[in-house]
Length: 167
Length: 404
Image: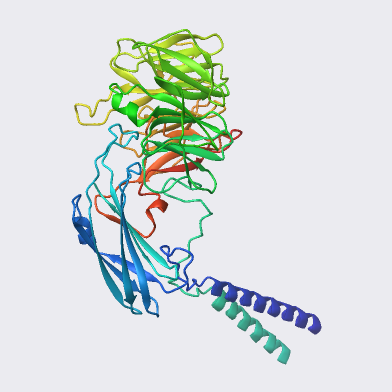
């Protein structure tokens, strides 16, 4: 009788300890991953991360005029100095039938680790004349202008920001 | 006795451990990470299972699935492209200065395009001198071959394409083209009025035509044309400044069309014009409001499923409701919302809706509501979805199953 009770108690104890261990491990597994994915990082580069900062008020003040300017701050979020960072600006129309894209490029020689560099682009933001009178789409409204800013390191790391300007 | 005391304490300790460890949260503030979406699947606000078929800027329109369903052609700012419905790059079929109105696949390798090349554009006065062009896959895709001039409307049917040609200012004619785009049957009998849109019957033997009758300013006539006999007849005509919007659709339960008071801009009270869904039997008669959709339903675009059993409808449950995609079963009058859109603008052009060949899904065009402030995104422009008009594949169930 005592042996039976002993074995039953031991089996129950082993079951409870095992169940407790599994529950403990399951709770550990719900901890969030500490890796932060950056959606603006294009694949291919393995160097330090960059961030691009734009002045929202300046963006709002841009108009469909020549001689517009825009300041861009590039932040080196890595632990190593960045050199020869290519910064490009492509100005295009939402209407892809218009071949009016303008391309601007500058190079930043170095950005210290944790530091920033500022780049100013001067460009035309004049909406090109619409050669097509008939609008094929149902939405009859002016096209928006698009600014695509990209910083690229020689190692292939790239960070991009696309700005869509209201008409 | 020692055993009894020891086992009792072990049991108590074990139960306490289970409750303390197993039931406690490791971190009360830890959010649950969202599930990673399936490859190619997005949820742009159009409901689960939605898949983007295009991305980037450009006004898209007139989607058309290839007969095999593995490619979809559409217009972008007037020019024509096609893209694999799986993964793959977009292929351009026309030069960027081409103005396409509609595109249809005549076969897996041939695309027929209704539109105008730029030199003809300058000569247009009434905007009705479009031509039909043929483009073959694998050839110089930007070199189009003109198949017919003064083409008014096109629609798939009879294993190829049915199209209407102008025949004087007040008349039209129909013709059939094969899968390779060659015209093989031009009908000699004239149709009174100008055909504005057409589509085939479920058995492919007839076509329904939206017609602007002679001396009428509105597209107010609805005719059927027997493609075997080459004879047509008017089945109904709208009165009171009413016009037919888009292409009438021939289901197994009758012909459906969208109509309403002609819109020039805005009505006198400042509200937008409203169009409604009507049904008329192929034998003709007075149109009646479509049953099942609700008396307040505002319709924009309709397309019949490949088997003729279902009608996809883009519209609003009432004038103040958001635009959504619905599927009507004309037999049971079951009307089901397929999308649950609240913040997307679904495009409502007459050709901005297409069924996949198997009837499992529908392609629509939508975008997010544009902001009046500059928007900054962390992706290249050609990968953005919500900011621009883009194509989405919406699953609606197979032809064997009732759309949900």
